[in-house]
Amino acid sequence: MNDVTPTKEDVYDVIIIGGGPAGLTAGIYTTRARLSTILFEKLGAGGQAALTDRVENYPGFAEGISGGKLVQGMEAQAKSFGIITIFGEATRVECRDGDTIKRVYVDNDPVPYKALSVIIAAGYKQRKLGVPGEGELTGRGVSYCATCDGAFFRDQSVAVVGGGDVALEDGLFLTKLAKKVFIIHRRDRLRAAKILQERAFRHDRVAIILDSVVDEILGQTKVQGVRVRNLKTGEFKEVKADGVFVLIGWIPNLSFLNGTVELSDDGYIMVDSEMRTSREGVFACGDCCKKGLKQIVTACGDGATAAFSAQQFVERLRGEAYA
Ligand SMILES: Cc1cc2nc3c(=O)[nH]c(=O)nc-3n(C[C@H](O)[C@H](O)[C@H](O)COP(=O)(O)OP(=O)(O)OC[C@H]3O[C@@H](n4cnc5c(N)ncnc54)[C@H](O)[C@@H]3O)c2cc1C
Image (cartoon, protein in one colour):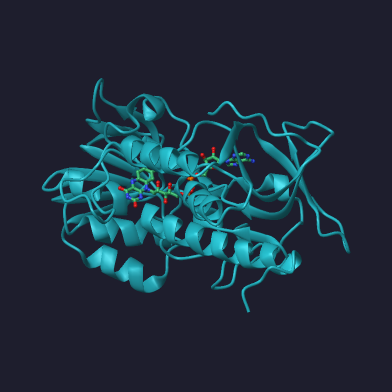
């Protein structure tokens, strides 16, 4: 990512874990505040946003912008202020009681990097169906985010896989755009809130297919439908659809935290309005936090707030706080 090699002897002001929009924005703010900052990214800068063909809802781009281009700009901006970015996976964060230094272990190396504060921006990953066609057609009709991609299916047919609140909320949202929405769920009843179920069942553009799983997503260069298997009868049928929204849950990328900070019941980091976690000096931002709207713009806002909180924390530790 860049040529500077950080040392494990130095104590940095901030370590950021994750190089998506949240982590990169945090890095822009910490480096502009002249805090020495290293950012670890395990895959490639940009996070999930880099996978998005066209982002139409990030302010300032009336024609939309490719997700890749947007996050490349964020990375370049953070580098211009002096961030050190390194390919590597944070595998453990250690905060010892009574010690102001936090230790971040990377790629299971026994010698940690050290910092006064840590910002966790690790995002989450969507649960996948794991069926043929899913990987090949992701971004070509297979999506994991109706808010992001729904507009591409105006007046078309879409299939939503899942039966929870998110699947139904997003399925109902898609009725505003698509001409037909098939909701496919493996159980004999939906799990979503009753009010959502009532709305879905009475909507004339929604068809609910229960007791059924998607065995294959069909199409060569773009989605053309799904092959559905009824779990009770064993029968197969093809449902024609131009898009498939897989909404069967998410898994936050937080196994490396191992009890360092408080998590919600569903595994997200609990933060306050200043993006402080339950652990002093550890902040979090973006999709790995417990919150409602998970989007690029909210990830960036969280990142800026987390950076500002980290700045205040570090300056207080050093006795440099601006009273
Ligand atoms: C297909 C798709 C389309 C989307 N379209 C839109 C859209 O149009 N508009 C919109 O606003 N939002 C969209 N989103 C949502 C948006 O991409 C996310 O809300 C946003 O990227 C969240 O940013 P983040 O930085 O919190 O997390 P992420 O983007 O998930 O970034 C987290 C980063 O942390 C890294 N990481 C995780 N664990 C570790 C570790 N232990 N060590 C080091 N690195 C680690 C990951 O590799 C990743 O790069 C879309 C999402 C998808 C999947």
